[in-house]
Image (cartoon, rainbow, N blue to C red):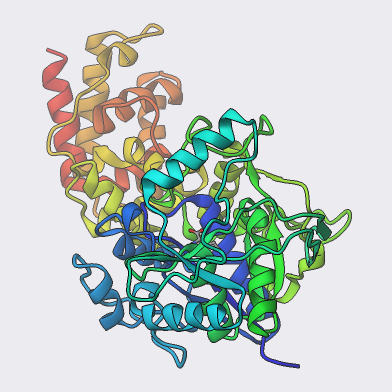
Length: 492
Ligand code: GLU
């Protein structure tokens, strides 16, 4: 069997969309399931839609989320295509270059070949002429499109021209799509589309067909919005005498209302999920289940990349759309956060804590992380829970302290005694802190809970915190004592 080769072919027109993540993921899962190769190609021939810096951000995003390709543009190729490129993501491979704007010679050559074969022709119609045609077609209520005026005109190669494909009349095209099954077009509705523009840049159709052939792509997995271009692509493969790849048009990613996922539903760019504190592993796991399922009646939802790779087959990709639920992704993210090793979680929290302006102390973070891990769904959920550890001055919620029969005098006494007890500890650890605070409640004839609330607010400022003894321990003996004394002063 020939090697299985897939390609992810984004156009650098902006940020990577979450739907693109799903396509790229399926390319990789499918290729690797079969021991094949996943290729990254940059489709940058539509010069009007290029966004500077987009290639850099695209490959950075892919790498952050953990989608690694086997072949793709080298550092040098990326640098040529994107002036802002900072390096470090180059891949390379035998089918180089992987950036379409660096393959123009191949498209031109192929367009010439198609002319020689009699299935394409040069057209020098001016934009005024095309505009006039369109107006007349509209007036006659006809389908709008190129009339074929230049088909038999033999336009010379040395005048400015485009190259158009001669769409055969009355030609049915049948696609055996690996996801959608048989799709049939009884007639091609396109009217002699442009393959090569006058500046020698190809249109999407020509570039895609040439590259899928040259890069020996065996399976084209792509979003189903491209389905309508498939008949033209099949005709081009056929005209060139090239074997067409297997096509698999992937079901759309839908919002919970059944409409195509868009910014009306919420975040759609991968970078927004990253900034919101989602873990790449959770995103990949979640996206895998949009449009693919592991099996009938299968309940398992948490899958590693290894397991996904082992289980991914196209026959389990469903034709109907897959629903993207933000709630469910959040839930899954929480599952992944809880499964992280504490040290790993510390590392992932750091940028968010720093971003919130907190000067993180490694020891304090290490002490508290195991006690907040269960409570996090998104990484920034940690900020309100741990900020008291890293702030030089805390705001105290005194109103919540002085409630339910607790008055300032009693609270002051608790703070002073707690400060004294903690200051005197030779071993400052969680059990000693707990014993001291419980003992104090008994001595003062107070409920333990009442003592805890006062100490909690004195030390952390807040009434909702990680577990109290662990929080005091994480803060450290010196600061805990200082904060208790400060509170006593505040209480008059
Ligand atoms: N460059 C196209 C895009 O931006 C790729 C379509 C295809 O996969 O053929 O999505």
